[in-house]
Length: 237
Image (cartoon, rainbow, N blue to C red; front, side, top):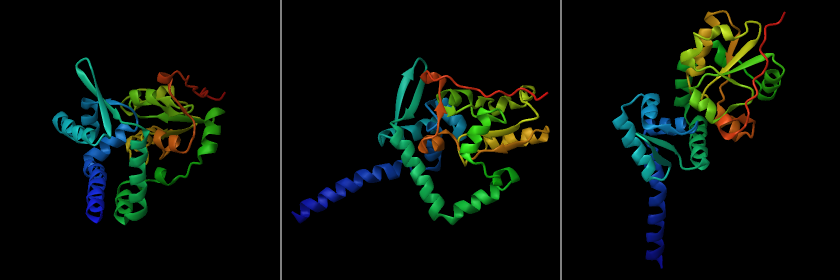
């Protein structure tokens, strides 16, 4: 019986280790983070992770072998998605563990993300109230396909790459709050820099849709048949 029990434990923990091996690469963790926003093609994942399509494909195959992602061929392109929401929950649990245990992570964040806009606390409930009554314009600066997959209630889509050309759409008398994929995404930081340089009152919301989903806060998704409600943003007389 002792020998049988030992073999059982070795095999069980060996299966657990498959997940650990699959997420032992920084690039694969970044790919999971992007897939928490919604499904993506290999080409898009390669661009977002700053790697080649061939390398992204190899990372995805490792994640797929651990049953963390699934894929589907659509015409000439292969699209990947998380196997289920539990994978995103696992990723965020791993991130929280690192935040709680690794002082080195704090040092990295402090070195790269200590601008004034990162220090401004934004209360989620009051933010939603201010968005609803038009006092705040909430900008989703992620790519448009991520916005369609799910966005914060009342947000309008202005992808970062389009922001400089769409400033005329934004009211200068309202506060603007930009968000992207979460606390370690830099798209909103870059958006705030652009907006402040042009004279807008802008700040960054560290949360992204996965953080709000985890808290049970409202998300909207036109792709899922839920109409997005944009706040009024007319200039004051």
